[in-house]
Image 1: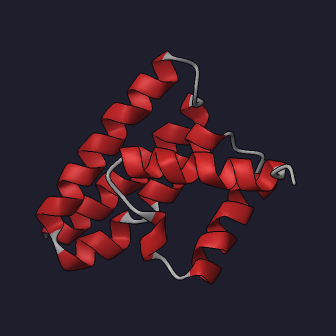
Image 2: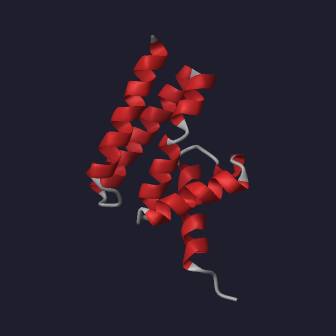
Length: 110
């Protein structure tokens, strides 16, 4: 039986999130499916969805370990720039995500 577009998208996003250093498998299946469905509903491509989902991890990580969160934010910002340069994600999407993550980091550093 052929795989659906949804299954292919979900698998592609999961692989990209892993490349960013995170695991969607750590989320409850219901939460993971909800996030992936939101990304599809917003018509994000697989790279945009992966970056968005990865930035969604920042607040929880800031609560656990500020330094690890700082490293994650830097990694996501770098990958966002690389993917933008390759026309895989749009600046309109990545710039606000990075700004919000940096603002959350500044608040956590206080």
